[in-house]
Image (cartoon, rainbow, N blue to C red; front, side, top):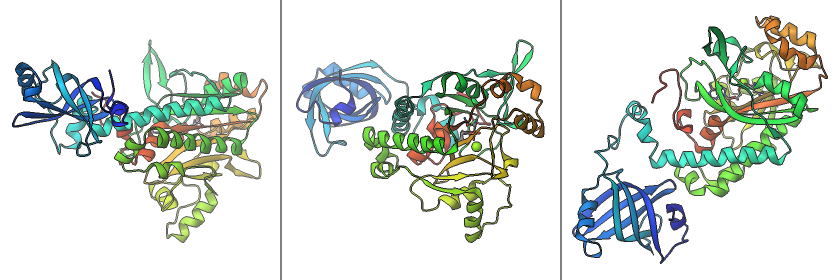
Length: 429
Ligand code: 4AD
Ligand code: MG
């Protein structure tokens, strides 16, 4: 058994192979059938001559519609005219399943493609993205493990939120209210006092009603937390992990990168350090570009676009106004109205890829911040034990895996960064 990718890399030139896959395209001309077969790794042309196979086999091939499942036996031939440079001259083709007429044809609407997402995921575009996603997830694990972080697992059913009530999904939990995790935040700050350097990749849930090209209601979140560390150290890791993912994708999936409209060279150049500016500096820069943002307001898509215009690497914005920020972020000792928080912002309209901060360590300060945000500190009592028993400086961040993949693959919409996207408008198929 071989894969299309191995053949296209030249590993089986001149040899007899067996390939399993599905018919991607098919046409018969005279005594020949040209069947393009896809497997998980790509597509390859299979040429079947009427006189090279039993009559029944050729008939079956002629009858088989696209997405029929096939097993092909034949010889790999280097042929410059074939897409990818190789083709298989078939000696035998077994049609394992004759597909019904496939509902997806060319030029169908986005909405229809979302209705048949369970079939659209077989497309060359989607499978290229999935392969890059696979490499990206592996690279995040590799980076953090390589830096001495422990992988730990937080719960998804939680008694309280960490990122504000507006985006909390409520679920009925045997007659009581529970919430789906927006982040591992509270659990990370408990676990970090046990394990010191921790990370995780898992789903986060946001009841985000805004229909944008960069919000999902369910997304995969790569999060890290580090004890005995401040904002600068974790910014260093944010740059490190993004760069590592870009290097791995460039090395392992160059063809997929090109197919999606980026180049491996572009990704290879994503190396630390990234350009860094404070929120105040960002406002000044925006003003010079004719965009006035009131101090204290969050950067929106418009501002993020302007700040990243012409940049080939993401940028880091630090020291945001405290009023817009979650209760657990540490105040800047030099400017108490700012937090030691940062975002990593990508270009092409993707915006915030990473959000992180140093954490407030003082019990009374954090209780006050909870009250200011309309929360009842009693609901967070277990969490506040992290400020009662051995509170130390710590910091961390969360990275949206789909945002990162959207940026790497230059996707117009974040929904294509995940096989079955969850948005306000739909949660099926
Ligand atoms: O900035 P956020 O809300 O930060 C947190 O949740 C922190 N507790 C993380 C931490 O410090 N451990 O979310 C972090 C990242 C964002 O930068 C963004 O990339 C992604 O999560 N994100 C989303 N991705 C897709 N759809 C959404 N609705 C998202 N909301 C946040
Ligand atoms: Mg954020």
